Length: 366
Image (cartoon, rainbow, N blue to C red; front, side, top):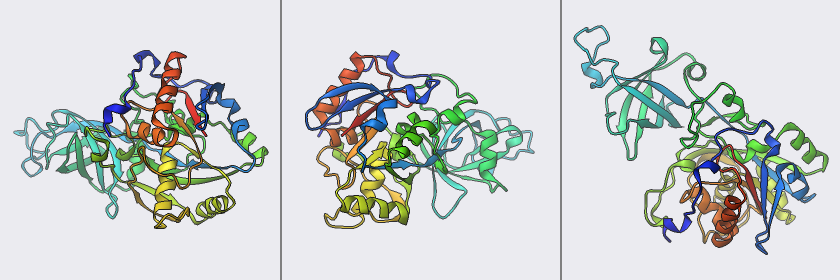
C-alpha cells in the first residue's frame, strides 16, 4: 500500500492558525460508516450523537512546554570551557529542541528533534534560558533531526521547563506561541503531564459539554498516552508497511480497563476521543493475545501502527480532528472509516470551508 494513496489537497487558508474563543463552537462532520452519509453539525450537538449506553474514553495527558530555544557550543563538549576566553565559538549558534520522549530509567535523558538537524553533533553542549538554567549534552544522532540528549541534573526539571520552555505548537501554525496557548492548547480535562502535542480531538470539550454528557447518564473513563514522535513524525517511506512507529508512554488503569471490558462484554459501544485514545485501547487489547476483545490494564510504551486492513477490537466510534495528508493519523482514520469514504469526507470538508488540524474542526465516525 502506497503512502501517496493517503494524499489530498488542502488550501493553505483552511489551516487553522488561531483557536476559536468558544471551544464548543467548532464544526463537526458526522460520517455514518455503514451508509457513507455526511452531516454538517456543530460540536455542541455531540452529546446528542451519543447513545445512552456508550462508554466515552478520553486521553487525559497534559502538554508540557516541550519546545526549547537556546544556544549550542559548536564544539565537542570535552574541548570547551566557559572560562576560556580563547573558546570564541563557545555558546555560538542558535538551536531549537522539541522534547518528545523521556527515556525510561533515566529522567535526565530525552529523545528530541533538533534544528538545525545537520549541524548539531554528538558531544555538543546545549544551553537554555537566562544564565543557562538548563544545560544538556547530545548523546547520539538519529535520522531526520532526531537526537538523544542528557540534561544536567536539576532540583526541579519540570519547574525549570515551565520557566524556560515554550508551548509546542505544530509547525503548520505560522506564528509564535502566546501565553494564552498554555491553556488553550490543552484539554480541559488534562491531568497527567508528558505530551509534546495536544490530543486535539479533546480540545473541543468544555465543562458544560462534559456536564451535558454526564447528565445524559453516559459513562466516561480516562486513559493516558503521552503524545510524541509516534503521533506526529512524518512518514518517509514510500510503502505504508515499511514505516516504523515510534514508541509512546501509556497507562491504562485497572479501573479504566474494567469499565471497557464490562462494556465490551455487554456489547456496548466504546467511543474513543482522539486517535491517541484509539491506539492506546487497541494496543492494550492486543496485549491480551489471540483474538480476544479484552483490554489489559498496565503501563509501558505503545507502538501499534494502525492502517487499512487492521481489525478493530475495542473502538466502536471515533471523534477526531482532521489530519495531515499522508500521516499515520489519517491512515488510522481511514482504517476505521474506509479509505474512500474518509477521503471523500475530507473533500467535503474542504469544499465547505472546515478549519483543519490542531486548532481546527472535528469529525465523528460511527
